[in-house]
Image (cartoon, rainbow, N blue to C red):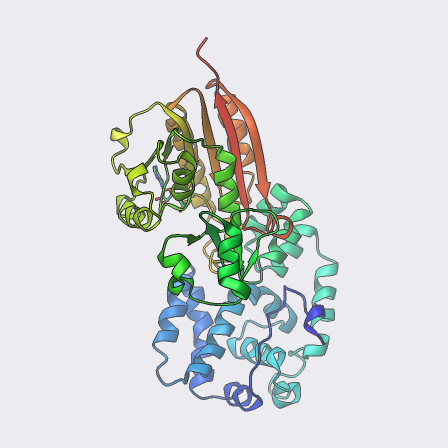
Length: 419
Ligand SMILES: C[S@@+](CC[C@H](N)C(=O)[O-])C[C@H]1O[C@@H](n2cnc3c(N)ncnc32)[C@H](O)[C@@H]1O
């Protein structure tokens, strides 16, 4: 089977030597690590990423390529465990591990006798998976294909309809690293050559080709590029900040949006960066210095010290991050409806806080990296129902399979002039 016919809802296949796969299939250090790991993740889903990393770091008996094999299994399990369980009909970690090894190239005959009738050969896996998915209602098919909790699958389906499948499909593969270029993109592209490719839709974005440490590049050290998904770049564009303006970045975090706003307002403008986690603002200040915009950015850790009105306020709200499944495979393990409920309340509070600080005629932007209507369209509609005196200028949703970005949402309003 070629990989063109290997669907995203089956674990990706890598190059492994036959001898490694054979050793891994039978009791020994690789086998013990791999089969123990999934149980550990399930016991602590809220710390899934930490558990995987700790267990692999502690695997000193394994050679680096053996550790890589176990790591690949662990990350596959986060995205594919429900399909592995469905096709084998088993929850036994030994069965799941050997099934995964078979799809990585271990001959089925080597282990089939240990698990009569449970394992599916690589040549039959796609057809078997299609057969399992075909008869399911759409929400259950989503949950099975992408290993989602039922509540999350339902919300994604309610939010995106038929687009949910495409968006999740695109986020199964690891998303590429994207750079934000400050200045002339063509020049930076020429300098970096085949290491990057221009983003088709976002004029400031370059897509990094393959895996590399961009922090070593002169362009990064000299503050001419920064790592930022193209969707974030588009959200900053949508703010429409202009030279000379004064903006507030109310949830500035590490400063991803602050840097774009600082460039947009230019040397005569200013950006105030606030975040409830004041420690994040320390890193933000260092980042702005490297990018040469420190004098335009003031960090303000105290919410009481935010002095409006501003020409524009951005609320890059804390959210479930369901648009970033392509970057964090552990998010679906950590899904918690109670957390969504609490985020929705926080988002509303932030929107109202932000609205009070926009000058008449100024701009309010609310954005998330979520795909859920609960955090997006419904929040925008809720805000409009409050009658705060804003008119909507723009609303957009970015979907990974359509826009070549992580999933994003934003709404832009203008504050009506005082009567
Ligand atoms: C989506 S992240 C921001 C990412 C950032 N704007 C960037 O582009 O790098 C949301 C941020 O909101 C912050 N936050 C959460 N509750 C907040 C609150 N009540 N007031 C201000 N910031 C808050 C979080 O600490 C987090 O850094």
